[in-house]
Length: 166
Image 1 (cartoon, helix red, strand yellow):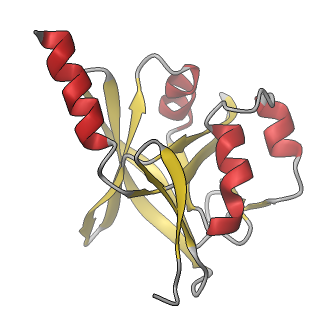
Image 2 (cartoon, rainbow, N blue to C red):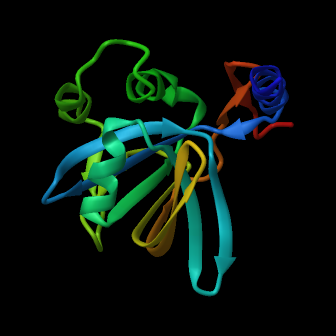
């Protein structure tokens, strides 16, 4: 019964369109990143968002140890980098960051994806362990916007584009 409910839940969540984000971290424990759709604003005072990362992901411990991250909201032209960070292409982590698409954040020097719709750099202030995931509550220290581009979404288990032209 539990496996059936879990599959029904996953199927239902696949119908929830979500922005595609490449979440990155750089610090004493290394540089890492992953593609995530489980990102949500929590508050604007202080500016806080949450990021959910599977506890089985090898990046989970790196995010925790570094204590900071950057959420890069992808534009429609950034599907390939999103696939790299989702582990869909076989490109190693070091190679992903060797691409000439990164700039250090102005405040915390976190990897910011050039041309992203938004890049939000912040400090992890709390972590909640919920089921299979860690929920990283992150206070934002720096935001870079690059608006008026089409957005990259994930819906029905595939990448989609949302146009600014309606």
